[in-house]
Image 1 (tube, rainbow, N blue to C red):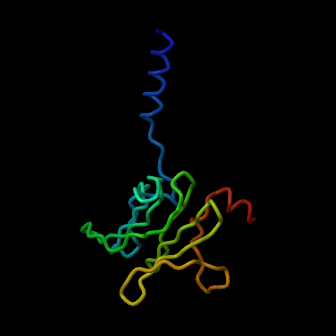
Image 2 (cartoon, helix red, strand yellow; image 1 turned 90 degrees about the vertical axis):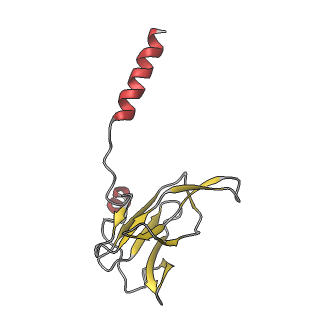
Length: 136
């Protein structure tokens, strides 16, 4: 019984510690202009065996939902996200190394796959440390 109490106390103490969010996984995250708020929660999809998926969600500052992505970024794997200076959302998928950018085109938010041939450049803070260090 004593060991169970020690384990319980350790779990409580460990659970109460706050780990600051990574710069490329901040939830919520306000755009540089202050017009938009990005959240990337993990949600369960009841139509797909209730599997968890990361969902890119963009709202205005009043909380009105402007865009909710339907991508299937697997929730048990990591994704990293951030804004760039032009109020575009960037996401790096650690599962396959793909990058995506969301921007307003024709008055609507749209997701586009990113390729290195494009003139856009992802923000430096997008990639996780292990990926940035590998590319040096």
